[in-house]
Image (cartoon, rainbow, N blue to C red):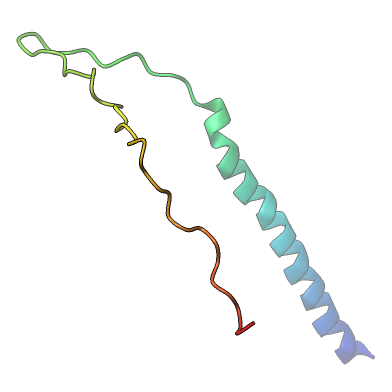
Length: 78
């Protein structure tokens, strides 16, 4: 009887350790919630601010554009 308790106790300890580790990982994932915003970067004297007017430009879509076929291929010969 005593021999059977040791593996069971070890299994319980390993399970408890694994479950407690999950909460530590979750805390690290949530660290951004405590982050503070930084002020914008200052441009040094003698330098110009980069031109950002075309930074997020999206290309125009041609009126005759055809989207690619998004249907999945057949799984078997039907």
